[in-house]
Image (cartoon, rainbow, N blue to C red):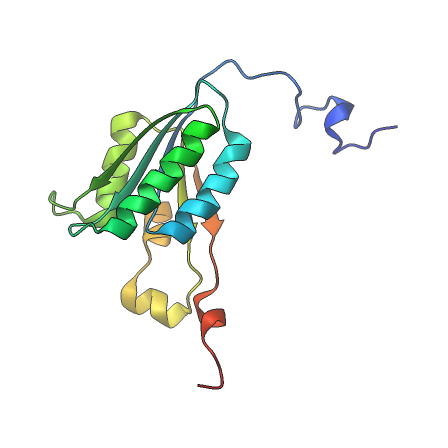
Amino acid sequence: MPGPCDPSAGNAYFSAEPRFHVVTYLACTDGMEASEAIGEILETELAEADRVRVITISDEPDEELQRAVDGLAETVSTAGASVESGVLGTSGGGGPVYEALSEANRIDADMIFVGLRRRSRTKRYLSGTFSYDLLDRTSRPVTLVPLADVTSEIDPSS
């Protein structure tokens, strides 16, 4: 007999029925690590008719950022969704969060995906974080995709 959280139980939280609406996602990446992590999550969420806008925000884009955007766009298109990608600058003067939210409004995003780097409170206070600022300024659903803990990569013996 299926339990209450079993998808075969037919409860409201799980449905084997296909959804009949298109979902528009905004995926914000800042490098390969974020692109790979966001791609893994998006692959499980996407339906064929969905749309994904993959962006990075930088006034000085480099090849690594472009590869990160292209890699995530390829993952999304392989999953069957339509994809559009690009590098946005901060020429509007509002900073990266402003640009991301402007893009979310432009495409009428149903959900925003962004990588979350774990940092100490002091580092978050001193340098700010894109993800927390984004959460603070939007009413759209945001999925924070955990990335490697920056402090765990530091060798304590050095």
